[in-house]
Length: 395
Image (cartoon, rainbow, N blue to C red; front, side, top):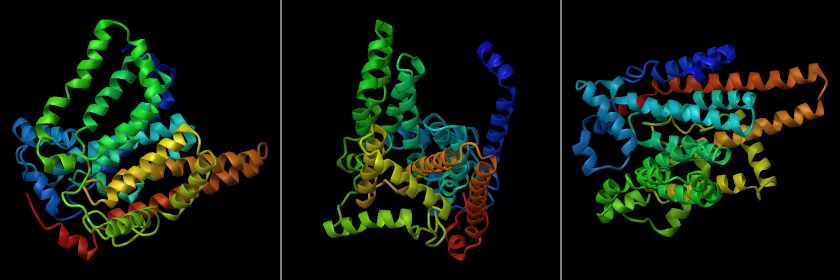
């Protein structure tokens, strides 16, 4: 508490900006949460009536993080309506936005983090997934959280919060179908830092706590994956594989949906509109160019591995959806913004007019992109006739 008070006293202006940002984020997540559409979708209706609590978790522990939050929500409010049914998802949606913004801040700088955070928070896909009672939000949350905790482990391998925080996150993500493959990739790229953390924690009670946090997640998981069908789901595989030609078509479709036009999924999206607005798409392509130039770097290889594995799992038509890759596009777009501003300010290092024009144009583009996405979600989508036919169920 003393450390927190001293930080607030020394950084009062920043503290108020953070508080204002969190308040704006809470408003964005909660505004018309239960009234934007007139009812629940079939997926949400299933979420509202599915078993919760220990009995429900023991017999179906997949998607554990969200189910635990739903259990608390439904226990406190037994008569839950549309707002309370969707409320647990908004927590993970807000956590995803904070994680991605924080990650970009640590990787680049405060200005780029602000731009990326605004683009991602106002992104229509982020709002759809974060404000809908489905399991997609866990895939949205997963990779930014992994990458953020990786930075903590790399920079502070001797700190308890970085070591134990990673172990807890890995344990939670083990219950999200398909995430085991991303965790294996992450463990491979972070093996040096994991070993450093182990070496720093050389007391018996520290290593005992490490083992305990590693093993405590396994019994409930093992009980649930003993059935072949559940094991396939946990691995991110469908119950029945499509023919190879269909899988190849789906694999190409992943790139089409991400970069050209969105999927026809009225519960989650508006028609065939692109997932990325034109500015974010341009910055994403610039970020891809930067990473391709630096493809031997560990970060480039890890992001590329995440993307390829995610595209394969989506193409297999299992439980993993596009939400697992969308945050990566915004991370790459943030790198594109940082690269663009770096190149611009390098050309005009001392010209205040040129610097102001460059920053002003980027700011204008961000405002227009955010306005476009907010209108697409809050205005166009709920008034679409197809959307209205999907959200017709009531708790």
